[in-house]
Length: 215
Image (cartoon, rainbow, N blue to C red; front, side, top):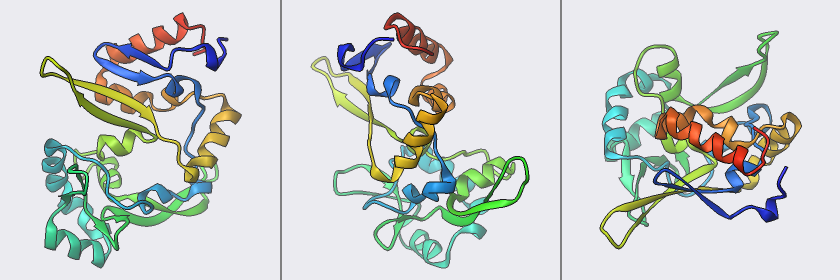
């Protein structure tokens, strides 16, 4: 296996630049430890596109009963999204931090089906999993801790860059990822395929093999 300090800092897969930390860091969300706190920490909502806003608005009736009265009031006042201080479209938030689509519920042990933690969960995702809407959740949420940025190029096009966002609240996910030997890009296989396609993801896996990384 190639040492991390011998890897190039950035790879290009198709038209996407990707930090090699995404290939070398281990990660696996552990809701029983973090309690889904990424949904309620921070000072802005989750980045969304105009298409996603339309999908959220269509899914809103299915998610609405799970939302708090405060969240419903925010949505009634300003809608499901707003433009933050950096000029990005993001989901609306409550009390300056909580995503409006957060609800609180139990997660269960897969084998015993007994509740093991009371967590912050996503009403949009729950409505989709229950077949009551077609919108999963914003891709920025599904990809986290990968963050996507767009940069203009000299020829007028845009370059997509993927970076690993290291946040202390995700320490349990790093610990669990190390225990399982699960690289971040493998943990996020589904969201990466959803965003960039299966062929792109296969090229990413081939690049890891060429670099001598285990897959």
